View 1: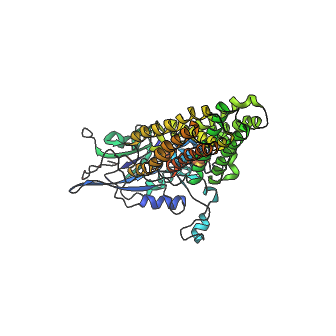
View 2 (view 1 turned 90 degrees about the vertical axis):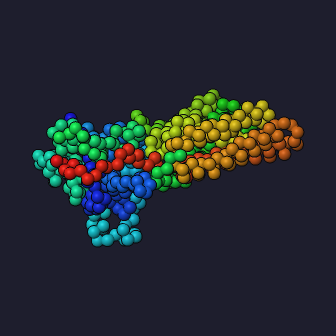
View 3 (view 1 turned 30 degrees about the vertical axis):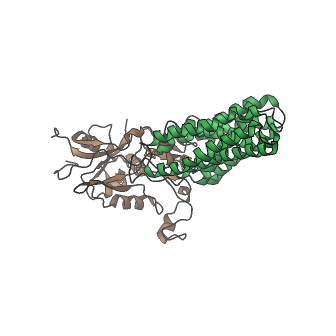
Length: 219
Length: 284
Ligand code: SF4
Ligand code: SF4
């Protein structure tokens, strides 16, 4: 079995938002919608302050809160762990949006563009009305993965089969791969480094892992 | 108290979603109270009809909210796990049973009451399953939302039936419901202390003062006065109707607050901060 997952190395992320820009470019999301975003988190009080940049988006959960609540079955989980939305089934009730513990979902009205109600030339070219007034979120660039696999490529290794944010990351902070495969890059990263998942207590089993330190006993 | 700047207020469910919980809850509560407790009140059938109309109005509010209203029937597709699908089915059953009752089939009273209760339960479960919103997800939110619906039903029943002079015994046992609602609110609020965001708690506290004062103490006092026999009957009826309006109005305000003002996201719990300055940490 395959379980696609994302790994973010918090030690490497510099908060440059290149992944955010790459995602917007790859997926032509409307203004205000960031399927991949980067949280800028500061904790503590002077002089004991720490700061972290935390790439965030749909976690493609094992037990997705969004799938269970969706009244239309528009939101589903594939056997490889990717959570998808059928834009033709979705009624835009946004129940999934209020159920998702990661603020990963969006709904945007028709006719809202970067500079008001008139699209720029590029926006007009890339506009897809099927994705308006319905729920949308990060897809792990599922089309790239599927078409890459069809060509015999390996997601997470070959850029053509890898999510756009991972390809674009300037610091190699993001990695993508199959955590069921012990030899994959993500499995190796998880084996060598200490990691956590966010909002574990929500019980959704996120497929997004965050590295924060190396394992002391790892070579 | 928990403080996290990433606990943002959700803005997707607005007054239209709140309208469903307000009208649907109160309408279902009215149908339950009337069918189970007061079918021999003159005009009871029409009070049930008013309850059904309110449920319909609530669903209309949802229809206004969804992005693709022409696909609304897709809502029935996920009965296996979605409480929104189940709410829709419960509404259909309620309308089928209730319309028969209104049209003169008295044996449908209890089944209509049960269907209304199931509808109310489905609504409360919708909130319970929204894992991202602590104020909805708290264990006591489900009974509180149900109790609020039933209390509103009683309030509306008082408001509508006061002028039909229901017997005093109909009023007094029912007064327990707003009291129970107020008491449960207090326990629920304590439960939320460590879960919900401070901004959500402030909104709930502002609203709670009304729920406890104008929604509990005042109406129960008025209802007791109305039922005491000390007042001339039009005054007693007016007192009872006012009590009912207060119970229903504060219930609606509570649900509006819960859906649109206290619905802050749980935020992100980041258990560790990165240990930086380590060479070759990522792919090596
Ligand atoms: S992160 Fe949210 S939208 Fe993504 S699978 Fe999990 S619950 Fe669903
Ligand atoms: S907005 Fe669409 S995907 Fe989300 S719960 Fe509603 S029908 Fe399902």
